[in-house]
Amino acid sequence: MVTRYGIASVEGMAAGTAVLLAKGASPEEGAPGAGGGMTLDEAFEAEKKKFEAFSREGSGETAGIFAAHLEILEDPMLRETIEGRLADGLSPVDAVRAASDELAAMFAEIDDEYLRARADDVRDICRGLSDRLSGGRSNTLDNLPEDAVIVAEELFPSDTAEMDFGKVRAFVTRKGSVTSHVSIIARSKGIPALLGVDIDGIGTGDRLLVDGNTRQLTVGPDEGAEKAFFAKMKQLAESDEEDVPLRPAGTPVAVFGNAGSLEDITVAIEAGAEGIGLFRTEFVFMNASYFPTEEEQFAIYREAVRRCNGKPLIIRALDIGGDKALPYLNLPPEENPFLGMRGVRLCLKHPEGFRLQVRAILRAGAFGPVRMMIPMVAKEGELEDVLRLVKVCTEELEREGVAHDPTLQVGIMVETPAAVLMAPELARKAAFFSIGTNDLTQYTMAADRGNPGVAPLYNPMDPAVKRAIEMTVVAGREAGIPVGICGEMASTAEGRRVLASLGVDSVSLSSPRQISKLKQK
Ligand code: PEP
Ligand code: MG
Image (cartoon, rainbow, N blue to C red; front, side, top):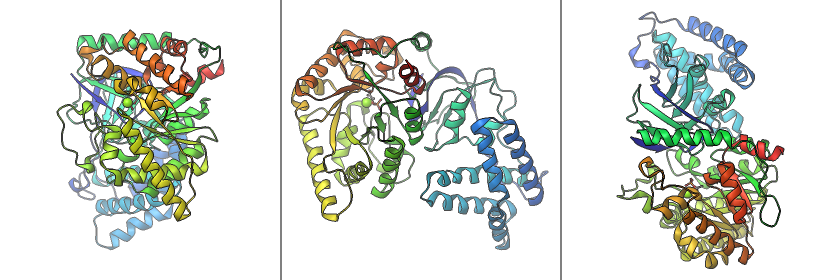
């Protein structure tokens, strides 16, 4: 049994059988026109018919995706680029591939999120064309089992258009951009999806448990893990009917949303969230092949602010380490990664890189109410170091005349027992506390959050965890700072009731469906 985490997800839980989707037919393998391959004209015509049918048969957003595909396919720019490469002497398959790279790169550069997302469309269209030219047809989805969990490097709209959703339970992919179609389609079909997952070693036929709420994938679960999974599923289904819980003072707990991508922000705000309580920035870094520049980060954070429509946005500093790796940082393997170079420890170890994120967040703060949140704090000194860096960056931006928020609020995640024990001291320096019950539970109970063998111990409702939360709330209240929760403990009605009774000011939820249920009442 193996447990892995995705970096983003579409909520929901599903158990099923892995179906590994083959990569597209390799262009090198197909000689043009051979093996039943088509000519370029025929390939264009066949793809046109396919997209017309998909957009006719699809509904809502899915139909829109294929209408956009059709537009790109019929845009002379695509045909002309391919013909240009043919004139350079490339084979039809290579010409399509070269055109795909060229146009996708061009779209990817555009400073407009909608147009940038068209890069994926171009690649999807060109893959379909080259399949037809080479005579290879990839990704046969015939004979799916009744409980298929589709596992792929990347899923394109064309893959999903041909799927029998009566049989598909979930998606698991290694790649998935913030504007990824996989998440749109998963949401529209009401199935969970995990993106940014290490899929190495997963084979067709493997039993998988997909938890889009905790972003957790279990491969080959044992009996205990199966039991715990289905018990949680049942509990979630039962916890639907409730009102926003009240704090001891009688005031309702505020409801925020957790986001792992820009899309998640839009969905949470549309569902009625009062703001974003946790914007996980890992995806910004994990979707890149190099450390993103300040400008690249700023563009994403500013867009995040725009999507919040004036509501507060808490941007979490990079929380890499533990289960999340960044290949280009070349971090040495650790014996105990969850007790190793994680979160703020890593940020402070590389202040030159961290500085770029701090500056980008400060700059985004000029466009709306932004707060910065520091993960994995264990010592006051760590918060002090971050605050010093924020001060230095603020002064730099001031000198450079660059718009920024000169009074950026910096809060911390309380997710280590050390932070709980030092909460009164930390509360004097932090602008807010956000309790990360996912990690706080594992560190308090000394029970790995990804190890179903110790699942009974990994329980946020354990009296020890509740006491840790209460101590944090009391320290926050005495210092006059808000205390929220952004861990999954808030994803059940029972958890929310306990949290409210302990006096937390807000909960931040990963599930847009839960947000809208609570906010409708
Ligand atoms: C947590 O630890 O509760 C949390 C919200 O952070 P993450 O799940 O990203 O570690
Ligand atoms: Mg955490």
